[in-house]
Structures are given as C-alpha cells and as structure tokens.
Length: 154
Image 1 (tube, rainbow, N blue to C red):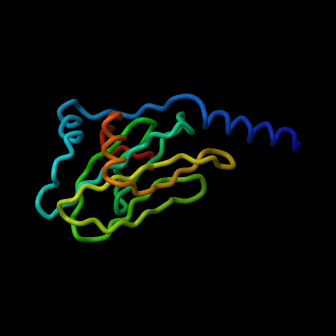
Image 2: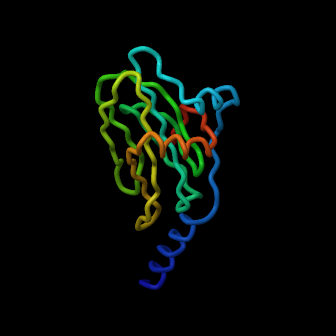
C-alpha cells in the first residue's frame, strides 16, 4: 500500500514538471498595446501578472484580483489589467490546498508587475505571487504571450 502511495505521489510530481498547458490568448492589438507599457488611465494603476516558471508547465492556475477572476495562467503568459489607483488590492492564485494572496497598495499612474511562481506540492504543484521591480517585470513580459482575461476554472 505504501509503495502505491509513493508511486502515485512521484507520478504527480513528474506530471507537474512536464507537459504544456494552453489557455485562450489575447488578440494582436491588445498584446501590442500592453507590451508598450502605457501609462494607466487617469486614476488607475496598471497591473501585469505573468508566469515564466519551468516547473508545472502542465498546470493551469486561476488568478483573481479583489476576488474577481482575471483568468487562468499557463507557462509563458501574462495578463494586463487596470485597477483603481491609490488603494490596496488583493491578488490571489489557487494553490494546492488554499489560495495564496498578495496585497499591494497601487498608486494611480504606475504599472505594477507580479510574478506567479509554481512550487512543488504534495499531490500537485502549488502557486505563489511575488511583486517584482519595473525593469525585471518589463523584461519578462516582453518575452511572453498575453492570455485572454476572464476564464477561471472556479
């Protein structure tokens, strides 16, 4: 019995490291606009959430902004949205057992970059969110495709 459990856990680990998941992608004009890193509309902050991790390529992970679905990530994709500036926002991603949150105060007129990282889990990979600086965020987003917003699994 223990041998079967160990094999099941090992198989789940291998699957979370291999494969490739796909999500609906944004159209070319939206991608070009987002990759120009525009100044957000008056009173808003820009938010880029991206994923660029080798681990868990077969996994899709939901991302939420203030409890509303932004979309599902897969490897080498990003989302761009605008949120109200000069206030705190809660960014959430699904993980293995419970959501992981990141709370950021976002100033109006500023773009923010958040990286979603996949981490090893017991049964399936988990995810976490981390704020990154402007230069690193722009460099990573420039290499990625843009996912279409609004489709979460839950």
